[in-house]
Image 1 (tube, rainbow, N blue to C red):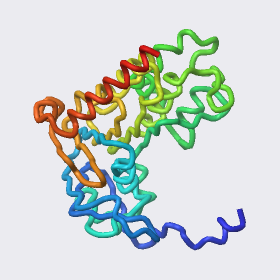
Image 2: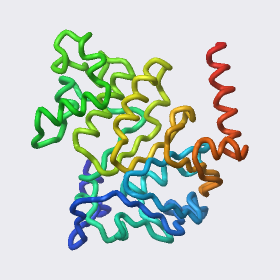
Image 3: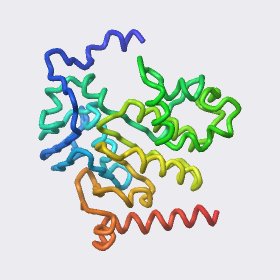
Image 4: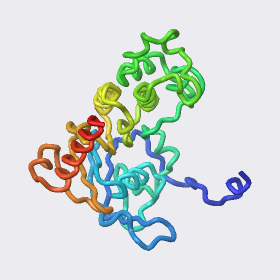
Length: 272
């Protein structure tokens, strides 16, 4: 703890621009990124222009750079070369704390705390309306399982959400993201650890939640991104190909190979 407290590696947003009324335009311009003390770039010549309200999915093998791109959008990492613009402003000039108030992230393994479902959804919020809460649980498909719990939304989730299934925990995490009404939503492999039934309910929640906001989806199961506006297929830190689901399947390139491989793996799991 002392080492952390004494560290001078702290974000400094003094004098930086605040973004009020974020639209959700995100533009990468010839971005390269390499981790400190590493020579090799993990992101290379990456250019992508995402308009407000667009849903863009990222696919690719492990280590292809998907998570690094997401971490740049969140502001955890800054481009080594090139620039990333949020609503036309370079992210290096933006007050990150203010910017992140317009952004929500649903990770692969969501963290739930000992307490009620309601407390977990509203965690960290100073104020919210009952209408906001109702809308979030409706859109995240949480209502579907509330009726089976003894105290509904006031039911205790247990330590780390141990009293709930994986799909139920993910839907609570999506509701937690939605109640903040983010203009940018990041879903980082939100369905990859789920069984088929849970995935169906979480997928319904995702389809409901992306409307009207810029959404980035990192996908392991390629069937879950069929309705994305665009799919970006990554390979060794670069964009290998981009297009709609149908366009990429017809191209029979990298995405097509990944799709065939994922179907083969799914069939093998079912056989086991």
